Structures are given as C-alpha cells and as structure tokens.
Length: 190
Image 1 (cartoon, one colour):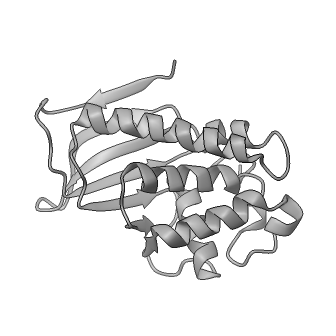
Image 2 (tube, rainbow, N blue to C red; image 1 turned 60 degrees about the vertical axis):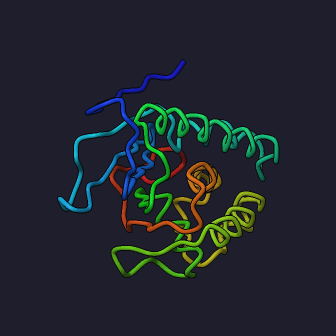
C-alpha cells in the first residue's frame, strides 16, 4: 500500500482548466491550477510513485523487458486514476508536466537540451521517444542526442512515467516545464 495525501476544497467534480503533474524521484504530485488567478489554488494530490519506484520495476535487465515496462506504466496510471478521482477532476483542458525526466524526454525529442522554459510535447512524439529509449540497451541509449549521460540508466522509468500520464489523462499534447524540482536518485544525478 502506498501513501497518498490529499488537499481538497470540495467533493464536487472540478472542471480543471490546467492540471500540473510533477514527476519527482519518490513521488508524483497532481495539482489543479487556476489560470484566472495565475497559479495554484491549493488543491493537490501526492502519491508515492516516482522515477525511483518505476526504475526498480524496469531496471532488472538491460534493455527492460516489455512486461516490466507495461507494469510500470500501469502502476503510474493506477495512481494517476486515484489522484483524478480524489481531486474530482473531469477532463483537464491543459496539462503541464514538470520534472527532470519529462524535460529530458522533451530534449531527446528535440535532439538537444531545452532552451525555452516550456516545450509542447505531442503524445505521439513522446510515445516514439519511449519506444526508442525504453527498448534500447544502455550502450545504444546513451548515443541519443539530448540525453545527458547521467540519466541513461533511469530514463526508461522516466519515459514510463511520462507516457502513463499522457495516456491516463487522455491528452494529445502537454506542456513540459523545463528543469526539475529535485534531484533524481534512480541512477540519475545525486
């Protein structure tokens, strides 16, 4: 059983304009953003499933086995479903994804490090990057432009997290916020 925390204002269904999903090392946070007020409105849900959790599922062999990738995506989607239900969010109009792994997937799609603060990532492009990075052995994976060498081992887990969010929220595009909120320890930087 994983730990979750919820901060909610009401039990009614929220027609969220923007949902911010932050993928961290140990946790993932889903927050409702009030675009009219220019920021967070205090409604959020955090669950204990992050890059390190998914890394422990997919890093048993190199390259990861398809069934391990499927299980990692399923685990993240299950937690995301719980978050959306607890937050009573119908369908978000806009999704913003933050975290080192999300910005790294966007950089690989771009073929170089992100320069702008945000990047619009198409779901099909994210799926292509996932299929490439998660199915290659580390020796081949490290040659992808935009992938920092220190993230070669943990990027399959990051890809699983990102595609699970895009699939789970049923969005065709998401805004990826460049940078990260905390170091990722699952084979990443200290």
